Length: 296
Image 1 (tube, helix red, strand yellow):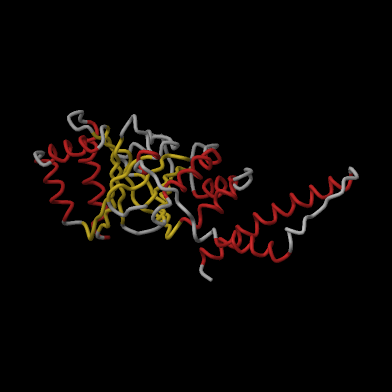
Image 2: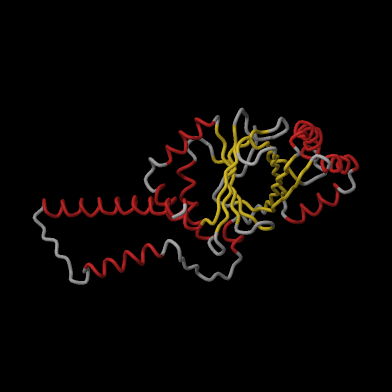
């Protein structure tokens, strides 16, 4: 049994225990008031086992209702139409300091220039996770037309093209994704530091994005008490059915305390229990903001 299956069984046991406690409480209440509880023959042991077996099977086989709308239209903020780009740059270890300096000299000039309809949301180095990695996130207000406009203008920017040329000498590999933001998450705005940031990335099973969104629309309320929620996104181009949640904490101890506190809220355990089966793979990065990052 792998780690994910062990986690599912642990969560199933927890939910069953809560269900059993509820039944015992109802039974005790009925006995104390003199009521007689009659169990029908339909609730035989064999039928109970069949229902239980069906319930556990539902963890792995889930039905998705047919939709006539694109999932992105149902999950994002249609009225704002922000598009995000996240970039992952794997840097040669010996070049990391020079790479950071190059980014700090170039990226703010694009962010601050109103000629480009884009904003630098944040730029980080990975502390725990993939080493010698930089992560950048950009926002394009106006969606794909804004992205196209920015890319066209940057190709005419000699300073930026020189930056790209120098950057290419320092990289081992790079990849990016285009993202939309979930409607029920906060829009990322600049923060004062110092903070550490956690980027939790989830590769979902195809066809489960709506289900994920429904559960997390409720779950996000349990994770706002320390203002740790920065932004939630899902992919449009790149690795599909990919979700990214971005969190901010003062330090690793605050992260642990905040995450543990979520389990004290009624309903958080059920949300985790029902969303875990939707995940194929998950990953966590702890990141430190660069000096030029609006998220500090």
